[in-house]
Length: 223
Image (cartoon, rainbow, N blue to C red; front, side):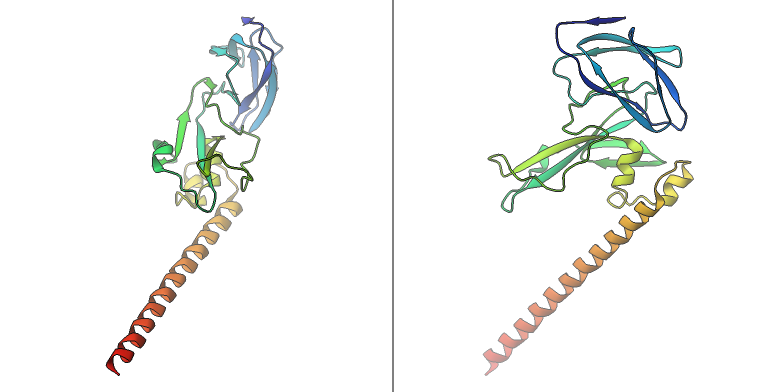
């Protein structure tokens, strides 16, 4: 089945986050082999498509002209849509602009500014797809002086990227039987510890300076 309308074809990602090669067939298109932990891109017009994984039908998806950075998920794995705020110096992002979802992963429950899906057709409408990278900063902003951008991640990649934020260690992944870049996670954890130590040192310095100022003022009053 591959019924299409007059809408022009747009790119969609077909993802395989597993450790084995898979074969995916979309509608009446030629089957595509996707290596382990790989993504392939295909142009797909609006319409309904039957999706098969290794010769077994998984289900049907429906493409519309509004779909942006969608992912065909034949293995029914979990994906995270990350929300990141970019602010001007005077901009403050209201907490109400962020979603707060919970998800269980590697034996823990996590809550954060993201949404989650394990549907056959993951269609968050993200600003950045699986293979794109979030920018370090934005050069222009809306009138609100802040903007929120979203990016879709495999769940493993999301918690690897933000391991230090969620206090996840390389050992946590290993215990769950999941292979990750341990060096990157340990480096990020070390960086976080250094930042926290620096922040604590700065706070202590500020408190000390405050006490010294108060003592000086007291001495002046006594005179």
